[in-house]
Image 1: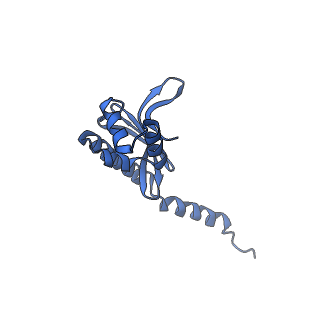
Image 2: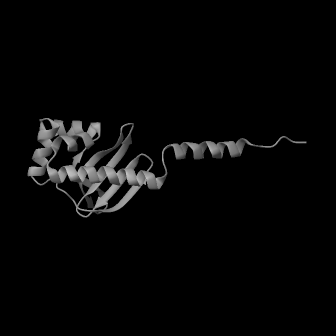
Length: 140
């Protein structure tokens, strides 16, 4: 009598457990949407420090370096020059593992998942035909 073959079944269960530990796709979409909503609320309210806290570390660093000022001042300047403005309601949310793209009425934001939650990696993004998005705020 042959021993039962559990190897493939165990492998499938391990993958399912790993995926479920990261949250289901609808849960991740909800998390991303909530983060973008908080970002948009802070943008409308002119809360520069909240906006900076929502940025991914590399994005914040790039913003500060390119503006040669602290994040709060650089964000304030981007808002004042209309490079970044509140963009309206969420239209679509696409989540690919630890990366997400959120299309709003007037902007597209990109996010990445970090141990502390979802962070904005690029904002003020506009699609360009046959080329990558052009973003006002982005990481290096």
